Image 1: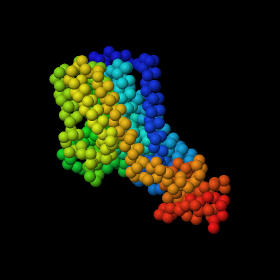
Image 2: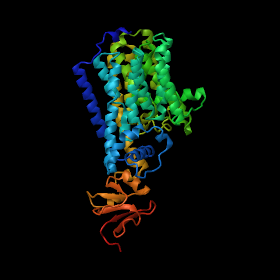
Image 3: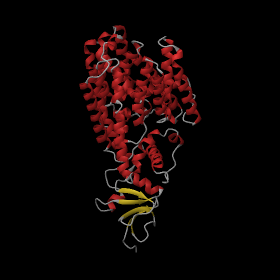
Image 4: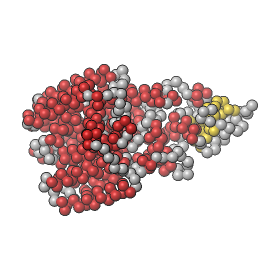
Length: 514
């Protein structure tokens, strides 16, 4: 099975580079346009925490709401977006954050392509990169959350790990642990990436592919990073029973299968099973560690809620395996093909047969989230059709090249459902200020009028969600025509409207009050 990889040229052609750049740019545009549909937050608590930390970094003298310790312990994402909050207008800064998110997730195409090129030809590597950037979970680009940075970092970590497995030089090992450290500084849960790296290296030593002495730098890196994470309180060791962890791990895998299709999951299992090539060992070890860590984290939550966000960075691994299966599946023995096909068929039935996938639970898994929509029948039909095509293609080599088309169908249909539900959730469920009807500020001020907010917790919250408010200041400028702030802050102006519950008022400056 390794002959396919050794026969491939090492460098991409100019044409494949151009195609890769085209995929990347298309993804940036698509994600930016999609994210622009939501000009205000929808993962409210975490977005407020991340942006508050970013604002405190950008303008240390500006008072901001308290930031949870879990966010302060992993400040990399907030540090990356902090320069954007040097802009006085919060709506503009928030829009630029989402544009930056689109760029960050799209840059993952580079390491995904490089990983896939180690096992398939350039055109199939482009398929893997394109499908990876089409996953519905990237709807998180419309939110200021660190997942947008963690997604490419996990791909880069996998690529760096493969490099170490291929040739464990000191430079490659240092680079690997730098990437792992950056991932841990993005989300505390990413400490599992380091665990996955250790598992892969131990497996490689056990297989006698490398001498233990060559991995001393990695040992030092693992010990140092682990000690640093424990010292700063970024990670906590949770205890849970093995059956509960196994059950929650299965639910996380099921959530991924439902939102991205069962075929990439089955292809990934088959890919890892056929050989000990570096890419399979690296992706398998990282997947095992991240899913186990997600299950342990879920065991500590009330109601054992499943967060697809904890594992969706693994989706590109399934797409790489899918591309390999489409390109090289005809060479796989029937003894492997048939069990993999049966596994795909069984998993495809799980959402309809097992209570573990109840739509009443796991509201944070975007695949299940989308099934709440009126679009749900179409999603179900597309998932079933794609699963049938995928099972047949996994079992019959001559149909293997239809696998990417089947998965693309699922991604497109589920993506539509996810986006519809995100918009519906933001506009109609949690925050009335986001509904399509105008809020009290919009109804009061004339069209195309800018409003200045005087700093206070309630006014800052309103400014975060209202596009009319262009600036938050300590003292309103003399040229400001409309001011919103603590009731009575605009002395000498006319108070036009009050929000007694929030203790803020909208005033028209320069108009004597009665």
